[in-house]
Structures are given as C-alpha cells and as structure tokens.
Length: 450
Image (tube, rainbow, N blue to C red):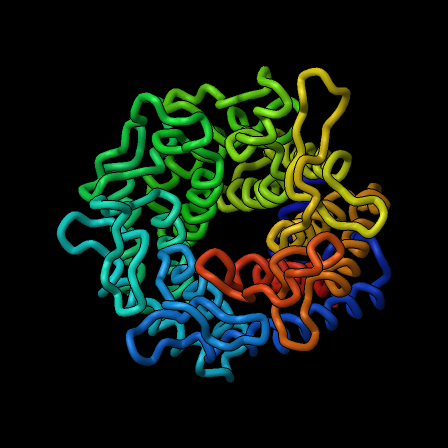
C-alpha cells in the first residue's frame, strides 16, 4: 500500500511514472485526441463568446449550435466555474490573451455584483445586469456557491497574481467560518439567510425538500475549494478545516458499501427512505440514491486533498477512494456501450442494486475519465479494470457525448436521450468546468512520461 501511495503522489505531480498501463504510443495518441477536443470542441466554442462585454461576467445560456438564448441570469456557481476555467486556460495557453481578459471580467463581476458588501458572502443568483434575484422575499446564499467562489478566485490569483482575488477568497473562507461552519457537529450548513444565519428546517416539509439538511455535494466542493486555497495560503485554520472535511467525507458520508450518502441531519444522521415502498422511493429518490458520478468525482477530490495536506502513508483515503470507484464500476457501469449510469438504488426487498435512472450525464462521464485513469496509474496491475474502462469511456464520450459539429458535450449521452442533440449546450448548471478539468488532468497523466 505504501508503494501505491508513492505512485499516487508521483502521478499527481506529473512526474514520470513507472509501470503505467497502456503503451506510450497509445497514451500519447489519446492525449492528442483529448487536447484537440479540449481546444477546438470546448474552449474555442465558449471563449470569448461567453464574455459579457455589456454587464461583466459570463453569458451562460446557449442553444445546441451556440446561439445566445434566454435572459442570461448569472449563478454564482457558473460564474465562478468560468473564472476557474479561463484562469487555468490562460496558464496553459499564455498566447491566447482573451482567456485572462475573460477571467478578469469574471472576477470583477464576482467582486462588484455578487459579493454582499453589507453582510458578506456571495449571493446565489443575479440577473444579467447584476441585480440580485430572490426566492420569494428571501435572498438566498449557500455554502456550495461560496465554495465555488473560493475555487474560482484562487485560480484567478494563480493566473494573474492579483492579490485582491486572494484576499477575497480568504474573506469568503472566513465568512463561511463565522456563519456556515458547525462548531458542534462539524461540517457546514448549506442554506443560509441573507446575514449568514443558517436556515433551520421547518416542520412539515416533504422528505425530498433539502432545506436545512447537510449534504455531500456542498461538502465535496468545500473540500475542493479548501484544497485549492490551501495550496496558495497555508493557513493553520484552513488546514484544520480541510482535514476536517476530508475525514468527514471519507469516514461519515461514504458508507460501508463504498458510495456516498447524499443528505444528512445537522448531526450527521443519514436521510434514508430505504424502508419505504418502491413507489415512494422512486418518487422521492432525489434525496436518497446512489450517484455514481459523485462517487467517482469524490474519489479524486479526496486524494487531491490528502496530497495537498502532505499526509504521508494515507492508506485509509486511498483504500476508500478505490472502493468508491470499484463500486461505481461494479454497479453503475454500462457493460455494453460503456459509461456510468446516473442513479442506482438498493431496494430493501430486491437483491443487489437497481438502476433507477439509466441516462448518462456529461459531468459524470467527465469525472469518470479522470478517476479511471488516475486509478489505472495508481494500480497498474488492475489495468483491465481501470485502463480498459477508461479507454471504453473515452470511446463512448466521443461517440455519444461530444458534438463534433457544433462543439461542447451534450448534456446526456445520445444513446439514452437522443433528443438532447438539440437541447441547450449551456445553462446556469452546465458550463466548462467538469469536462475541461477532466480532459486537462487526463492529458497531463497520459503525457507524464513524454
């Protein structure tokens, strides 16, 4: 196990790896295909087309053939993800000046329009001009959105060296510390009032209304954000919170079978409907199911956090990360065409797992590519399990997800949802973050021995 951890650290540092699966020729060919797609079929389609020269930030809604559509509301998650993508792209491709210009435009919109100058924290949603949008009469703030703000701001600091971005990232972390962090039970409250007060769960809500619950999705992206911030700001409190989130996700949110429980009470009791009828479960499964995409994504994010913390011989995290990918492959993988299904469920009176949503969304396949290749390089003796699945998933992605005519990825694989061919390419929940991060990480790993 110690040998595997050493390989893991080498891989993440993009230093030459011994014993990697696949021939050097094959790996370089896949890397070249991925880089072409990352540039011609993703980055070149979004940038600078999404640059909002009128109001700042990024335009977020495009048709299947990349024509602007809709009111162009601005969601903190999408805006921050675009800042992250363009910041990193400006480092990778310094000759393309519009990447850094786009990132700067996005940073200024975050700072001037989405940061609450009275109470602190980032607003969740504005219209295109930057006017805050409410839910009823409530101004909504969430830990999830503020996590992505930290992630984007840190990336922009790395690209621009603008200390104002780093200062705002620090300020956001400290705002979460003061308002969202649960000092009794650990972790973070997701839903916050305008002044940062956590939202308590009102009585009488249906079980699938997540208000007042803690959840895995905000937790894994707080982990991701804290990892990126800690790499440029090695603050002691930040380290404590990063480690706290790693342990909480690894030891509490991941169950014994190897998948993430999705929602929890504030004191970390899982929200489960497994004792209900199958009809009830299918109706309310949004609150309790197996999300294979989140599992393979979290495996990567945990190992990334462990590496940033310099945890030596962290076999516990490695074992659980591997278990999560193994569970997703064993239970959520399409053995015919390839790809991870969206959702599964362990019904009480049925053997094994049942696939309850067999579509294959774009972000889960992107995260799958990244984690499968990572596991293939960590465990080359299991290359049949990981590397062969990685190659099959890349083939699936090229055949059913990437639009080779209009660019970007369809929201769902066309094998299951052919109507997505003319669906929106971009909206406030779909941008460039998952697929750009995945392709970039895979390219670096595939070329580690070049």
